[in-house]
Image (cartoon, rainbow, N blue to C red; front, side):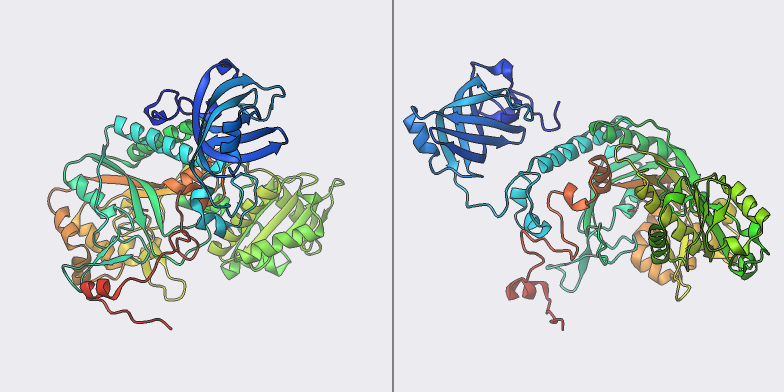
Length: 598
Ligand code: ASP
């Protein structure tokens, strides 16, 4: 079944048509059909007129013969993107088109009705036709008529439906939580909505349904999910949207692995809807292990190239950059690039630039030649046995390239981790149709501001601290791990979750760690703290970013391609031209005066 296939006889077909364009095959020859759709192309070949007709299911070729004067007349002014209805008999094509699923047949038009004319479209509605993204977003309704966009809408709808069924079958209840609510902290700014009936007061659009799903657990719901719209006013990065969709879930009386198993059911169903088989349970690793081995908290496990630590091994060697790393408190992280000795000097320089852009001070490289010799900047500073020891630790063989980054642990790991992914691309190790999932557990509870040293919740303030780190809460909170986890796949974070704090005393400790006074906590989450004191069950959950999930399944790189009406990088909707000004009357009713910026 093609992704767009539509069941014949479905109520959607209605009374105006009897078939879908994309579904016509040789079996239908000699039947008469009524089709509705858009003109993809009209070609006048002297005597005959051909009209390619497009609907959601695909394309069909309509032929108008000169002897049919009435129909000929009806098609005379027809151009691309007119909406039309055609009735005709299906015949076998004289020259079949093997590139088109309907290429064996065509429709001899017996009647041709223009239902709606179209202006000349600003771009050709076809997958390979060029159009800037700006234009595509401004005329999104035309952009969405492209077959690949219809395919995406279909995939998304099917995937969400399958995921919903999987979660409902697992016993979770779908519950809608309000959009007009109070601030829910997920580390971004809130979108505020002024209240007309309570002038001067504001709702905040949910950054996530976090607090409410926890309240649902306290309410005895036991298992909840929602395909939830979330709003985060952040400085937008390339692949972010200010409003996006999460598959949000929460369950009670559970452990981490219980959440994993439920979420895996969803992932499995969604991937199956996209035609891919995935087999849970997914592997697991701790955050520390992921950072140590892959320099990333969302490692791409489609390939190896693990980071190794050479700090101990190279301590004291004659080459200061390496030999003194340990005493400086730095680390040496290294990777072996199999067959990488063939990279040119220019390519290696480009790797250095990549590593530097990711925070490394520099990149050291060693090439292993076929004759067992080594070349590269550190070579002349190292003894023969130091070189061979290093090569042995990295498992290097002739033809390999060894890359090293020296520096503070955090920077060295992430810089080499970024380079690792870049190398994965260079070496074609990241096929889009292979998916490797992993759970990453035990994230740090807090994040330290690099400049001020102030602590912020790494995720949100409701994550349960790791029970083994309770003492550290008082002595070294930056080191406290949380019972929190992410699901990562192919170098992307698909979602995050945690075991929640269900005890007031621990919640208070975390607020203390965040420098939140009792009064502030009370003002922000008073209702929730109160709820926690009414028999809150242990509970945990996760939210998976649905847009990103679909992007991965569809093999796309751009989130905007999998959202029907996305916003630009500056958070605007080009089609509707919003955000936009409102009338003075509206502002007056809301009790708002606008201070003009700049
Ligand atoms: N509310 C969290 C988020 O949006 C997910 C969770 O902890 O369940 O990332």
